Amino acid sequence: MNKITISLLLLLSVWNMSFCCTCIGKKSTKEAFRKNDVILVGQVISIRKKSIPYFLSGTQKRVTTLYYHVIVFETTKILKGKNTQIEVEIFTGIGNGDCGFPFKLNQRYVVYADWKDQHFNGTEKVPKFLYTDLCERTTDNVKNEINEINRMRKYRCSFIRLLFISRWAGFHAFEMVFTLRVIQPGARPILNGSKPNTS
Image (cartoon, rainbow, N blue to C red; front, side):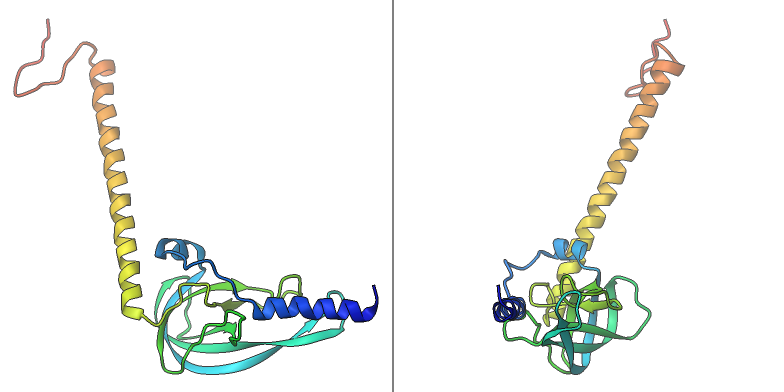
């Protein structure tokens, strides 16, 4: 296989990676809350383009240059993840088929993002950065999304509370039976104020 063919295949693979966005439906709130590393509410205060050189693996041969949009958010609420900074940078594609989310300046969003340490699969490690795209639940419908999250949390808290109560009740039922059968063999529980049979 000659050098021209190899170069064409590499360019085609990068083109496919950059310009073919395929997402099979949106994740549910529960799935996204479990899967994503960071969920925040914030307003876009700046957008800039960042170029990323793509090198042939194991070499310094530059194949092409791909681009990100770096979005800076002024956060108003962190729904998941640890963050002490008011301003947070999140990367996304620039669009045109690369799944980049079309953020708008001064718009508020609920952002679902993940930590990454590679710009492309198989490339060298880089300092960790947050990334989101059209395949996540990121949305500008802030009010409805927060309501969905609150409903999900309320349901989860109710389920945990019910589970705790059922386990507590089960433990005390076991404790009562253990006391009657082991500590007081032959004893019966007192029902409706009747006296236990001691004969």
